[in-house]
Length: 579
Ligand code: ARG
Image (cartoon, rainbow, N blue to C red; front, side, top):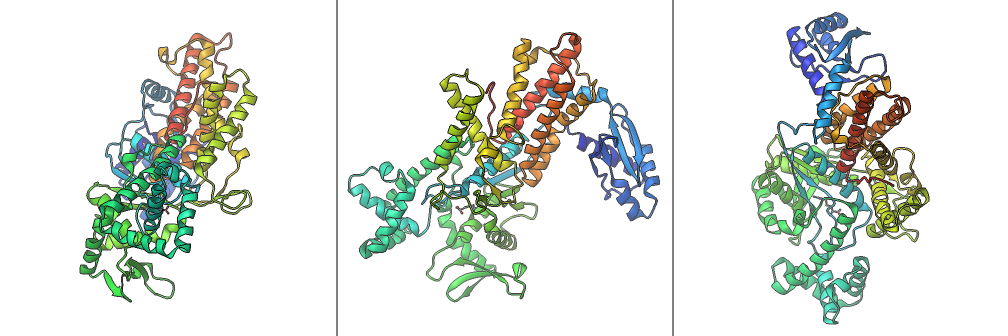
């Protein structure tokens, strides 16, 4: 059930019956203030302005045609022409009953599923994954989960950096270390260290540097020995990433990897095609597309180099090939990129060239969902104390340890195994939620104490709220699915909670549209807070509560726990029965 969609539809019908042209939207949204109904339709004002009539009268006309029998108990006009809709408690009860009986909580799959290609995580394989990749991985995964829950076809693409000149140096180094009888997994157990060794070797030993350069050429021309070394390097590095995805409870799998190397053979034809179409021109030996669309303030077009003077291709060339593949071969209607805001110009350039070249149909949506930087407490990009990059694996282990220590303080009766397990779920959940709950486009400060707090808009707070709701069933000795009594909305706290529960699908729609997971976090936090208020005001298991009311309240509790669990799952955060 999506109340907002339903009311938008009903009000639109009424507007048409009132001879208001279709282009004027009903503008239904949840009311912000108590006393103004549950939902408001604000479209009369805009329509009246365009039609040059009195907005309040027009609102009255819409109201006369509005058919909300059984849905609303009262509809009234306020101020200059707001239509306030008060929903009928019986109707709300009915909707809640349907949600409670449905494993999908009453949320039907979308009528017109799209094919969404979601590009996220996408680390460079030459180095260890670091915190810079954390945001892309977490946010992209939340969107992939959410879109697929809604019934869209989601194709995850891990566009790893597995190609380019630096691989010449890396595989030359790997070859030497293998010759010294080291296993590849040993040599590459710490990619950061390995990279430094290779770099030093390259800088200090001219013969090695020559070999590295030779290997770049051999790699590109498909020499099988060099390719085999590259494969080894690639596979060990991908294993490192995969380990992190599993730790992080991220849904990326090896089959989602389609790295830069995949597009190698497409690059030459792509450049040729852009030249044929008159988009790419030769400029000082390089091939460049000049974009008037993205000209700077002095009117100089923005140059996109797609082939270097020496013949090499660039990040943008590969991205153009990937984009064309995704729209063409994968049949995407929606291409979503979760990449750092610092790559905004790059993405704009790629999108603009792709549109001009006709690589995508007009109705395919190209979306760069940028995010800000994760900062340390000093307000600078997050680094280790000594200024190095923070390794993700270590950060996640620390999160789990810190959380386990907290849980140990709170609940001393848990077994050591249970504590470790809970610590992992809470710690990882905290790191993810801290990221997801911030407005995506902003920078944010990484802060252990804030993210691990049991108060406020945090993962531990929501996970704890979930365990508290679930504990009621243990105390009552009742299985939620044994209940079939009608849900009654007696107190105002019950009603407020009911409406929030029924707004879950509206929250999901918003997140899906704007790729803004913090909206789902806010929703879940509000839901948990309304639940606490309900719990204070409405006794459930106390003596003297009539059996039917008790059952009704238990069913509300059940819906709350399932909505929390489902919402957190879409964010990639696990819940547990106790903590
Ligand atoms: N490998 C790149 C980096 O680490 C990110 C790739 C993002 N995806 C893309 N299609 N460009 O900066």
